[in-house]
Image (cartoon, rainbow, N blue to C red; front, side, top):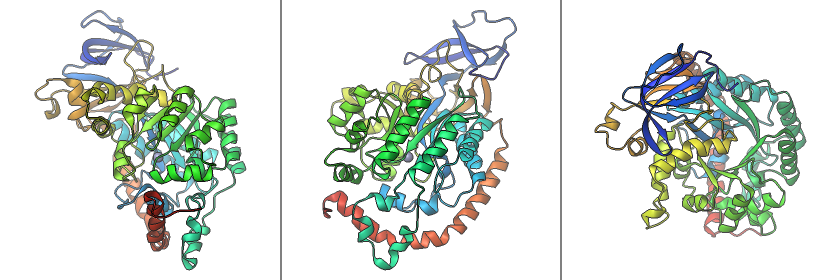
Length: 495
Ligand SMILES: [Zn+2]
């Protein structure tokens, strides 16, 4: 069963986004599913409750195609860091967490997303030194208890960031190297065994929370790890998600470690890329890489706010779409975009596409970008046909936008104003599976004040405990920066 609400509901007097247009329609919801779409005022089921959507734009719930709940604690902590410095600082920004943090961080992520009109996400969650079934089940429970759908994937590697880049470890000063030499990850056999248990014993309703696998970055995982994930995903029908060519340095390291092949070509050689594969970022992909992703039916999760924040580069998003690759939009983690706001990322995705060409015919329109953040996201999560559209048979994952706010005054074009003006302030009601979880800008499922107090308290504890790690990593940071910037700009060559 997709929804939870049994009693039929009719949402009347609103304007619903369908086929890239805002049209007057009354929406019948039964058992959490869109049962019918009526002409305005047309008779609905006799016993139905009515939600009045006068002055409301009804959009499909936004879908966040790429996030990391374990970093919900890390808003505003990232400095002028590239992706590589972000990863270098990972042990203190997101490290030291306990099993009970999984539920808290998922609730914190879900709360922010729901309040900003997002009803489903793909969460790549980290546990050190290896994922645990309990941690992944608790993450999913955090989403479910807050009222949100989620695909939960353990983010994994069997090489640390410092081990994964040829020459980096050796370039660090002898007296400081032990800081990162002492950081160890479990072998892939331990991670794969945990994943197998997670997939076999998944306790949640898979219409609401699905498990998937996330070997984090191609060269941070050995080939044996990759093929193990490939086989497990195939046998259990699970999705695969990884960061793909996110930084220029990664695109340089790929051919260095894979005998001249790009990261994408290497994964394809391993048989990893298929319809269940979502590549996050995809900034440094060439035409041959796009051809592989297109032929295999893979999806891309585009994360413009994170890419700008980390200076990772400008994704060739019009080329990705023109290659026929499905694209969703993600916020990425709070440590690298600071928020979980799909309205902001939709706007940035629209702007960013305009840097790719002087011909406006190549630019994304707001209608296209909204479709990416809904249907495209559903495709990236493996939930196509279930959510992401206002159509009969789809889940009633709906967001009612108040058209009387200043963002929509005067009301000239609701979709353009949704993408170019809205920041989340006009979200009036959020329904997931027909159940109202946000009303008048407030969460109905959990006590947000209590959650805020717990998250503030836990953030203070974690960052105090991680202070020695932070100091030790700060001492190494200039050397890591010098090495990685040198490799990226061609100043440094590594044999
Ligand atoms: Zn990410």
